[in-house]
Image (tube, rainbow, N blue to C red; front, side, top):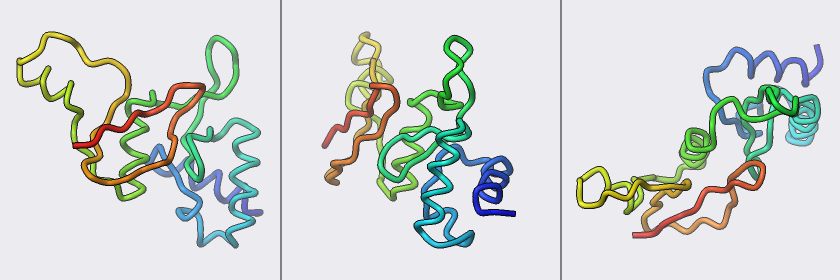
Length: 133
């Protein structure tokens, strides 16, 4: 069994939705794992969320192209957690939940505190925005 099929079976058996190449390090060298992830992205098993971040995929009902299993609102915080980023709710979400605002927060905004992140995480033109304390 080659590395691609082993990684594909591993992805199918995992409950995680977001993956990094480091998750598959026991299967082979870094280059071969990245090559296998590229193959799986090409055939529609995975979609790429950013540099070194992949998510489980399913075919779109409308276009048939691969899309993430869950929306970016769910996958984004999971991806940042995998990257060891501490998250809190955004200012607008906190205001809405506390009852101080009636405006419903839109978009995908996460508060990352004082950490610095230059990584873009998203899919199909929709990206996570970062908010600092």
